[in-house]
Length: 246
Image (tube, rainbow, N blue to C red; front, side):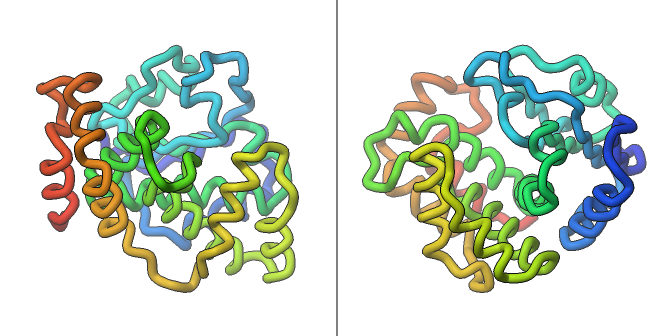
């Protein structure tokens, strides 16, 4: 249970060239030797409810510890989550992997970094997801874009570093600086461009700093939305768990 040999499910639609690129990317991350499924979907799910994670470009789920979507889940993904064969699922939508090679590398690297975060300390995932879902409802000084969440910034920096290992620097720079179709996405890459991907980034410390900064408001959300039985318990508990080594 949870430890089936790693699976790359291409659904018969991913080209040999992109398969090689996918494996090249995976080699640059620390991935458990068993229990990881990678699914490259033939569909996008833009008709799903607005808050559904399946409208995303990609997702990482720790299936063993109960990560799931609160909304409708595509049948093909339910087969993975219900099988109890895999502890982790990396999923990419069709639009994430089927376009330009640099898009595939970027989006896959982002999700693989989330996998690393989760295996390093489960509370990196729990705290990051909590902020991702709730920071928009908190009065903050930082921009209300998802890269403000440290685990997301960390994943984007990993995607940037990986892209630099595979493509020439001019192509990656062009990708970072190209005009985006929305103000939020433009702001996202503006913030990202202020960092140097070669510099170390302490995602754990950055998470704790942000959680402490808005602790009063965030504790209210835990109390009102998640309840006393939540695994999060409190911001104090989250920060305590983040300091533990796995």
